[in-house]
Image 1: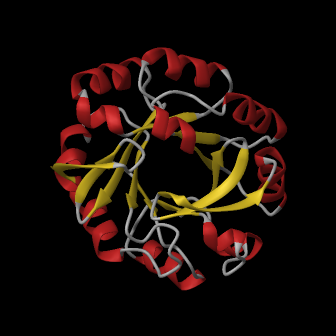
Image 2 (image 1 turned 60 degrees about the vertical axis):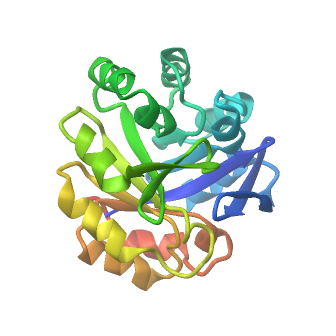
Image 3 (image 1 turned 90 degrees about the horizontal axis):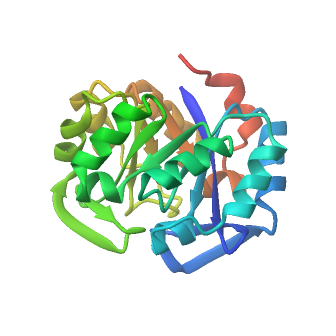
Amino acid sequence: MEIWPAIDIRQGKCVRLRQGDYSQETVFSESPAETAQYWASQGAKRLHLVDLDGAKDGKPTNLESIRKLVRTVDVPCELGGGIRDEQTIQLFLNEGIARLVVGTLALKQPDWFRKMCDKYPEKLVLGIDAKGGRVATDGWLETSETSAAELAKQFEELPIAAIVYTDVATDGMMQGPNLAEMQTMQQHVRVPVIASGGVTTFDDIQRLDDAKLAGCIIGRALYEKTILLSEVMKCFEPR
């Protein structure tokens, strides 16, 4: 199982939100690059980055922080938040980001997303953020009428690298992941599904692994040390 430590960036700092609420922010580090170095030293083989300002603004906002981070560590990084046009895709791929998470525009402009997936095979990840099984967009500020499973099925034939499936209700709450939703998603699509939201304990990771999820993103639990990355990496390796 792939383990993805999360680094969420807002105003150049490493932060965590609760349920995607920008008013419920905890700053964990002034330097995302130093945070990335630390996770790499603990055995991280990949990192999940989010430009929170970009997700809200619809455009890259923390470019300098992201650029410095990517140049600091020698592990693949994926990035989500504000990926809304091909120019931004090219920008971040040229900066050394391994793959990009596209969420809002995949829902709003599916033909564009299909075209980008064909043009950049295995470089794009479908980001599905859901509230009550419905897709949330625009930095989780809006909820659509489209179901998460419905959106995933639309795109599973494309050459996407993975689906990152985030349950907004559990994200940052330290109460465990929505295992049933995650398992259902993985069973309904052939694409690898990365679970995000609520992973709090070692047992949470074990349950996701037992449910055949391809990986999981871990955020607040690492920062608050309810999960120790060095211990997790000894037990879970990519299949």
